[in-house]
Image (cartoon, rainbow, N blue to C red; front, side):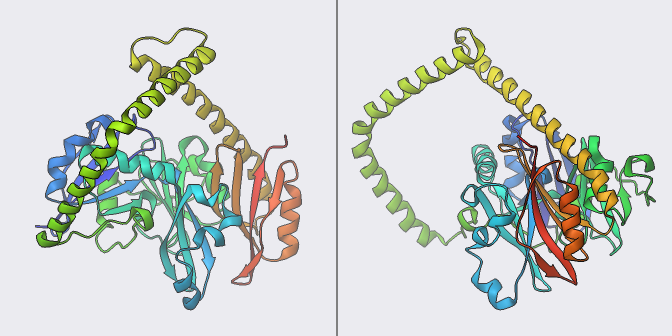
Length: 395
C-alpha cells in the first residue's frame, strides 16, 4: 500500500504544523495530527522514513506570475525567469526563488517566493532529519473549479482560493469580501468549508462539508507534477552504493583538508563571535533601554515581540490599501484582477489587471491617483489589455 506524508509548514517557527498520512490506493487518511511548532517537527521522522514526503507551503508567502511564450521561447528561458518577470516583481529578483510550475496554451506560470523563506523551511526539515521530494503551494492542490467558479477552502484563520487550473492564493478572514472583489468581481463561488453568504458579498454558495482540509488537498496530490524544488533546491538523485563510496572517500579527504585549516580559523571565528555578541548587546540596550538578560530565551522573545508589532503595522497598511481600492474596482467592472503580491519592506502592492482596451486601463489607473502608482509593461492577451500596477501610499 503506497502512502504519502503531507506536512503543511507555516511562515514562522512558532506556528502550528498540520500533518497527514494518506493512502493513494485506498483513498483514505491513515493518520493525521498537529504539531505545536517547528521544535516538534522531528516527531515525524519515523513516518517520513517509510513514505514519500510532500511539503505544502503557505499560500500567503507565494505569488504566481504568468508570461505568454511560444514553445521555442519556453525552452530557452528556464534560467532567466527573473529577468523576464522583473517589471512584475516587487523585490530584487536576486532575492527571490522563481521557478516554472506549469506551461500550457502558450502560457508559462511561475511561482515566486523569497529565498530566505526557502532556506528557512529547508533548515527546519534538515534539522528534523526529514528528507522531502516535493514542495507545493497549498492553494494549487485545491480541486480545479468550473470555468465560472472560484473554490474557497477555510483553513485556520483564512481561506485558500483557486481560480482555473493555475491561479489562486490566500485570503485573510478579515478582508475576505474585499479580497474576492479584487480577485474577481463576477464569478460565482464554490465554497468548501464553513462560510456565510454575507462574508462573500452575498454571492451564491455551493457549500460542501470538509472535516479535514488537509485530506481534501491530499486527494489531489496523486499525479501532481508541481514542485518548487528546482534550481539550487533540486533534490539530488540517490546513487548506487558503489558510487556512494567514492563520495564518502571524497568527503573524508575534504574533512582532512578542512581540519588542517580549522585551528588557524578557530581564533579568527572566536574573535568575530565575541564582536557579534558585543554588537547584539549594544543593539538590545539601545532598543529596550535596559541591560541584556542572562537568559538567551528572554533576548529572543523580546526581539520576536518587536517584530510581531512591526508585522501588525504592515498588515494594517495592506488592509487599508485594499479597502481603498475596492470602490475603484466596483466603478470599473470591466477591469479584472489577475494577481496580487505585497512587499512588506517597501509597502508596495503589485496588481496585475486586465481591461477590454487601453482607454479603460488608463481611466482605471487615473482613478487610483490617490496612491503613488507606477505602470509596468502593457500587452494584449485574448483581446484584452494586461498590465502591472505597482501601488504605494504617497510619502
